[in-house]
Image (cartoon, rainbow, N blue to C red; front, top):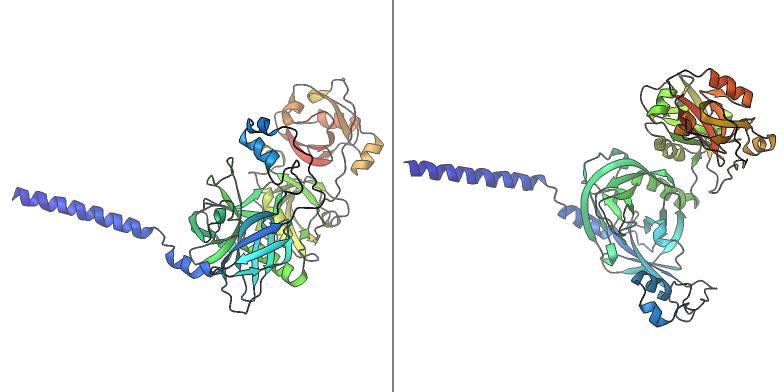
Length: 473
């Protein structure tokens, strides 16, 4: 009897283990049907770039024996076809690969700008191994999106377009692309974050994932579990040159907006507010009377901009844009960029501790490389002053070049509150504790009235750019 009970107990335990393993396996996503349904609309893109005229080479500065003793990196640099020392008769065309996907049955293809940039020839290879020459319809370097056109008979397979704004952190996604030239490779992971801001990419709120992305994946689609494209795989964060668990995709909402503008108008226009903004950290939030860090702090309003015409000021904090909360400063540029020039947007701002609404007629974003005023180049002095810094009146010519009515030039800095705040020699101070500073007399009067033990904001102009710092007297 005991043996029978023991055997029954063992069998029960085994059944429980097998059942739990089955349930666990069933809880994992199955991508097979989704991949079969969508692979046909994913393409491989290969480009050829011919050597540019004038690449005449200069000859090797070392003999071959010396070069063989160098590290591989240097050997590749001096011997490679793109080397400035290459023999012009041996320089070969440069080839590269990437991915893309078909968004219309008549042959429009989306990919990354950096996949096709500068290419002399673009070839699209379909899943059925057909190779079709592609025409570059247009590109948008700011969003890293390019639109290609191949000959279609309105029978080409197309992807389903989803809504990236509905993505949730933690949900499963997968990519199909050509890493290292291996066509239709599938990788999967989860959404790690949304709305990521990357350096020099102000107008794209990137989707961060842990989907394996490598060279050749660029321009390929990121799918959700409904088989809809929610992003274009674009960048990775790496210290090795390969995938390290952090990849970024362009939200499809933004990419399709770019696509439609390029297809219909041949170019892309974006809304423009005309302000320089910075993040609101804990200390700045305290100094401006915010209970918690949020919003985008306006450090500078550009002359003649929509923001200036609407009456926005430096020191205003944008809390909402057309009803959408601004949690981080990086939330604001994409919202402005999506707004059509000429439309009116309502901003909720904090000014002087009070919230107010301001209507702004959005302008069109100027071409890249808009001018920025250059900062002064005064010599540092040695006179001591309150807060551990010495200042002098800003020369009128320097004030005119910066487009400001006045300020004080920091000529010397010592250990103290000013140094701890990040103020440095040759900074121009225009405001302390939200009070204008146009001269040394103003500076001394404002400093004398600063509250003890409470953080206050200081607006400085450094190398032509305005920013706010936090000073604790």
